[in-house]
Image 1 (cartoon, rainbow, N blue to C red):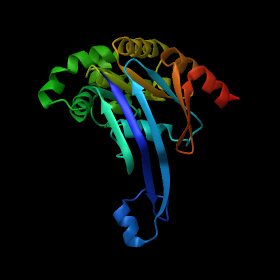
Image 2 (image 1 turned 120 degrees about the vertical axis):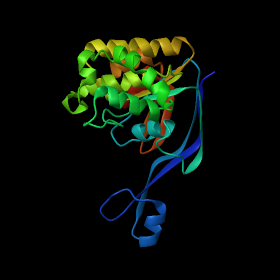
Image 3 (image 1 turned 45 degrees about the vertical axis):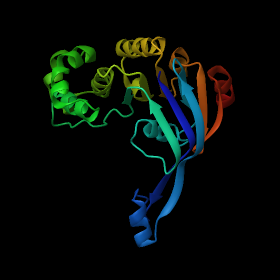
Image 4 (image 1 turned 60 degrees about the vertical axis):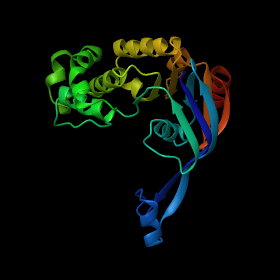
Length: 236
């Protein structure tokens, strides 16, 4: 069964004097780095069948937490355990190369998601159908709108038949028709015992997918409880 367990997870960012993110080794070498904790002592358990909304102001740690779940960041402290096939849609531009077509990008994203080259190739027609892009699928991504790019990214993510789906605001760039498709797919994942973790400012949509919420503040998990209750706390 799918689950996510975090035990005192911390993510540290180091910056040079120009506020560019640098490696810890480089920061020590120049002795000019400053640090900040994007996440600090975050502990929780998410069980099969749960939809969890991440709420809080910009800079509170929502995106950092999602990226850590997705494997983009590795905890500098603590431990994070993800059990279940994972798919994420964290950025409209993530992994997309504008000079390539939608088909070529889909193959690339499929490989990055863990497919073999043959599996990614065989999945292309299914991804095309899931995206609803039609003939646009074979045109350069540079000609795509934000919504079309989000459609492509979600279609690739969904093609791995995820048990855990992570969404970070990008669903808000989708047109209403495809947003309904994303919501319906998310509910199917939940009904099958999967997990949805979604961040964003579209609170009505979050309420349709999630009953539980994490209220993030300053990189910390300030509260963990029912979505309606924490929405009232956050929105005042």
